[in-house]
Image 1 (tube, helix red, strand yellow):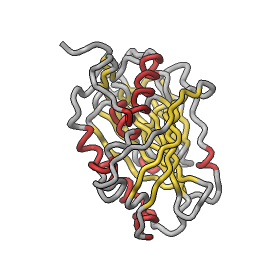
Image 2 (cartoon, one colour; image 1 turned 135 degrees about the horizontal axis):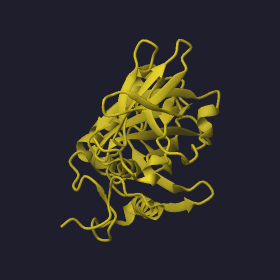
Image 3 (cartoon, one colour; image 1 turned 90 degrees about the horizontal axis):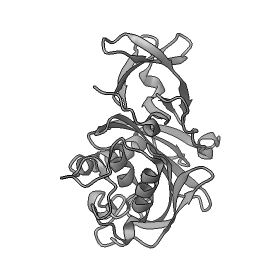
Image 4 (cartoon, helix red, strand yellow; image 1 turned 180 degrees about the vertical axis):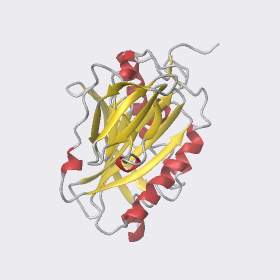
Length: 294
């Protein structure tokens, strides 16, 4: 397995495990950008990580950040700053760790799918979308240069069961969304929270790129929901992701193309267009097709 030489990809904080996956009795070995790594935990719970050489012997130690209920590391020397997500620090929210899902797809295909509202009524029928409510209303995108993030604001979509709490209420609703592309490998959304007029649930997707076409998605959430069970919320989010995985693993080409006209966008794809332009401007090569395939 070849470790990428892409400095943009290397200089990212990337998820590699949930805290519960690493214990003093159970080291955790995985792959990151083609690099084998091992995480171990001391008796006090402190997690450390090392890169492994071809024989499996430990090499250089890697830095660790535990944030948003996920463990992150980086292979770079000058990593992009971690994003700030205030919702995870608000004491009345429930922080729910929704597990991880493996996907054989480009990490950027996964981010783009997360941003796409047009598929709700076809892939997540009767949950996030309805067959007779297919229109993606106009919304805005912007590159917020102070934090170097892509935001999509003013997003709305009719949803029969926007969340476990909404599903129990038994009524569909027009759901407000705001999307944030936090990094090339991290994306989140804020969405309407049942019973709150001026506050939003926060749902994240952090992607561990094992290789250019093999990833693990981690899904922590900071929710304003005091009625649903943890199991119910986890099952809901896992159901959505597993429905998406079927689509993602069948997309071709597997790498995300950046060339003009390789995949024709529509009005509903403003966030995808902004994301691709931002990736191209970043100089990223990993996981992308910059030229038309022969």
